[in-house]
Length: 226
Image (cartoon, rainbow, N blue to C red):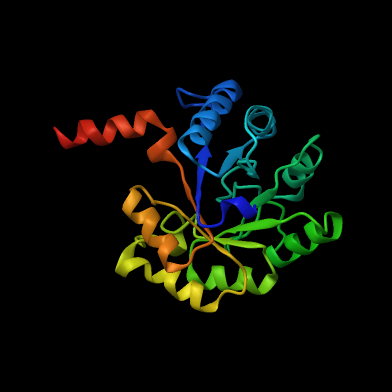
């Protein structure tokens, strides 16, 4: 992940109900991101990650999005998903997991989950996908290798919050506290926001939908002329 320091990571994801859902297409999307200067990729599912790793020579933050009933935690929610990622011929350089305070599908606490991962895979770097400053601080205390702002505004606990509010106050407060590198993610949808979070001291920044989801990009343009 060294090459991602001070640089852009592009999230290449398309869920089953999206027009670009295809491991092949995600591989080409990653190739386009690499050509544009991205220094890392974030990707979902074993198949997509394998295709992306076959296509580009960039470090990958890997996840498996898997819903369990009505439980709200679905980003690499249990050890089963971690096992699947680690069983790959070439596992992702970093595995990201939901690190919010919400109950997990298997009933484990985040602390128990992290302890289980560290016991089985002590050398695998982990990224914490968090929604609140308290969760970010807790993830840092737990020893996550990277602390992410991925879920700010996307959980009940962070509803109405925006990562960019008050000149990225949540990130500035986290940077004052954290011992581990901070990766900005979530609604970083302009080049100016990207530059600002890196200038503040974030290790790197993940940008997704505004680059890789053309249906959402198109909608922004259409909404502007309605």
